[in-house]
Amino acid sequence: MRAGPKGSVAVAPLQFRRWPRDRAKRRERFIREFLTVPRGHGVGKPFRLRDFQREIVRGAFAEGVRTALVSIPRANGKTMLAAALALAELFVGPPSAEVLVVASDQRQANITFRYAKRMVELNPILAERVQVYADRLYLPENDATLLPLPAEPGALHGHDPSLLIVDELHVVTEGVWEAITSMAGKRPESLTLAISTPASSADSVMWRLVEHGRRGDDPSFYLREFAAPVNCDADDREAWRIANPALSCENPFLAEDGIASVRKTLREPVFRQLRLGQWVSGVDSWLPFGAWDACCEERSIRGPIVAGFDGSASGDSTALVGCTMDGHLFLIGLWENDGTPDYRVPREEVSNAVDVMFDRYEVLSLACDPWGWRSEIDAWGKRHGEKRVVEYNTGFVGRMAPATDRLYQAIVDGTVTHDGDPRLAAHVEHCVARPTPQGDVIVKDKRGSPRKIDAAVAAIIAFDRRAFHLNNPKKRHRAASFA
Image (cartoon, rainbow, N blue to C red; front, top):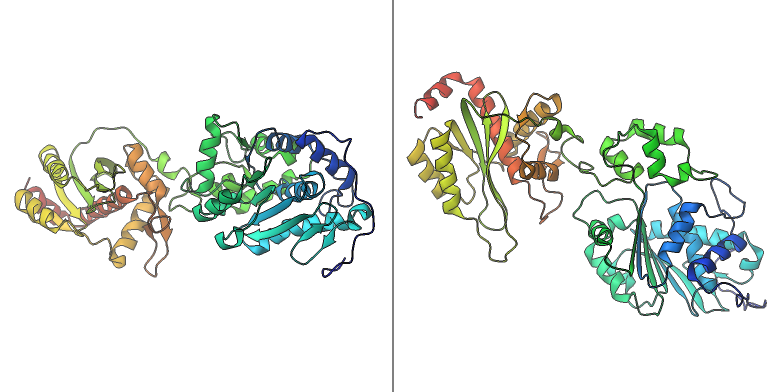
């Protein structure tokens, strides 16, 4: 079937008057009676919904549901199901149905479109009724249209969809979601259906919607998550079957040996996200999954310490982290924005914490990033010894990259421990590695991100300062004489 101008449709419209009035049952019946699998497992055979697919259809098209979100691992047939539902909407949806398939870009949106087009071609009854164009499907008997669109705000305005399918919600931005929601809900039974693997960060539209759905207090919102148990082993094959319904359903279309092969080539956090449907840290993170947690150790602080300080003038956080000479990191102080627009770091409170630290511990040195805190650093040096309070420029990659690598290797090798403070753990979890010619340095996941990393930076400074004193015992002795 070639795209291009089409002649008028001569055949009579299909009749659905005696079909169930229930929205889900109408779509299930249409798929069962008219659609053929276009490719992959079962190609050329009738499209038979599995139990988990029927569950999705019945949940999403239940009475009163306006927004549906299905979180499911890759390779579970979500794109083909989306194509089948898009076609069903053209025929058994409301008059003049408009179906929009929105994906990260036009290429991705066209994948669903091609599945739908092929399903039309495989059924002569549909083929003689649907006009196929390069950029849309059109059903003259019902004045219904299917359009694939990229996830760009400009492309989404001016539509009135009865069904809006969002493929891979995890890459959708706030601006795109606002454009989607601004045009949804105009019709009496319109539905926005998002089908996606989990996002790589909790700082995402998808995570916000998952949290909304989990609360269970919005009858117009349907959420279904397919995921392995939270604490499962990544190699647990039973967990694979729980997360991947296409692997455990009747007549499965996902192969276990295929998942096993993928497991060998993907980093564990990526495997958990994409193939186990889990929300995990570390997909883009600086540290391997679970490495930081493995270094947790409860202990008292004895002997001399060094400390790292990373400060902010206003909206960011400010952190003070200590490190014993045998390599135990502990959070001394963390001051974070409380969400108020005019928030400012409580400088006097920070200075008091520094003074308490020097009184409480045998501090060999305090290394401070000087940006925005020079006057306080000078005052700390005068009170506690200028040889013990030193500047540490975290913007100098030639210094920061080796220091970052030093702590990374210690964490991976298990030669460093930490106090398990959840605030420090959160900052470490937020770190993303940015390659430089001198090695990796840590940065936020994106510019302006609310996910702070200052305590992690302070930990790197402290651990690097420890190495300095271990390699310079005479300077360590001179610093201790100030205590």
